[in-house]
Length: 209
Image (cartoon, rainbow, N blue to C red):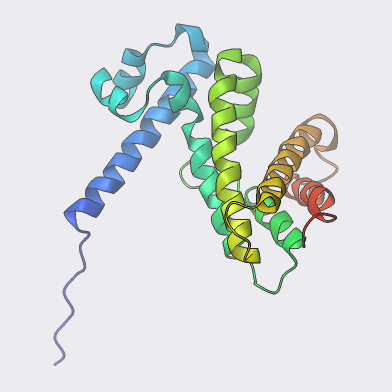
């Protein structure tokens, strides 16, 4: 009789890291929902903390402001976009790989713990709340940096060269334009992922090596 293998249990450090990630996400989503419901100006850190069962001090350990909390999941999603590009077949042309990686973010309505339609609703909230613009720009910069790094690794370029940074900036701008266009004009006539795929390919095809 072959002895059964002992169950593999996560290390205490890894378990704590997961718990911290979940707390951070819970705080971010609570801040987001409260801002949508009441308006950003009327949301207090104490209310966000209470909604997730932690203290205001705990909130401040994770985020410097309610604005930073609301926008934080966008940076998490940016890491997923970079990972999606890294997973594309190495022989695939870069323009096609970027287009498919961007489109893949819209193949499911729910992404990695985020509520359905979260990105669309975040962009609507940012448009309605000027106080969020600065943090959203910071998040966009983080997303572009992660994507530029993935482009550089894929092409073998040095990490500080201009081309990967320009390609990442163009791709993410095309994605945002596609979402806006789809919401205003193309809903029902094309899927969101197809609209994003077309826009990103259109933007980067003449630039990608």
